[in-house]
Length: 113
Image 1 (cartoon, rainbow, N blue to C red):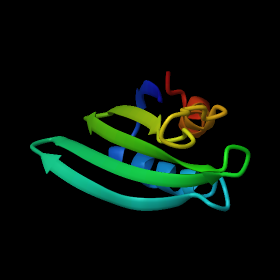
Image 2 (cartoon, rainbow, N blue to C red):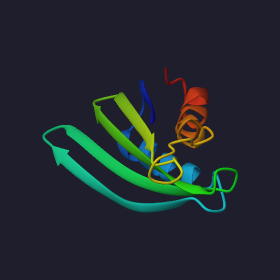
Image 3 (cartoon, rainbow, N blue to C red):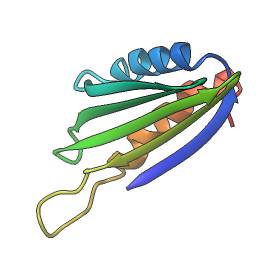
């Protein structure tokens, strides 16, 4: 498992849409499995679940991304999991970390920390 939490400025809807597009474009085998959007008062929350096949590890990894915000502050949390092989061996060859770093690479140029 690997995870990151980042904060930046922007519009929650725009950031979530951009992340959805860019993450899906990060690999031929990457797909958006499902997503939800919730609005509570002035806050918005997007949760997206992606799946990607990693040839080097012969497995699929999952990436869950939560995008939330209030006003101009946007919070992005990403958790990668499921990259291990078989019921006993959990050697993922870095698949989870690689999937999570996709989010980081997308957000860093936008000023997220």
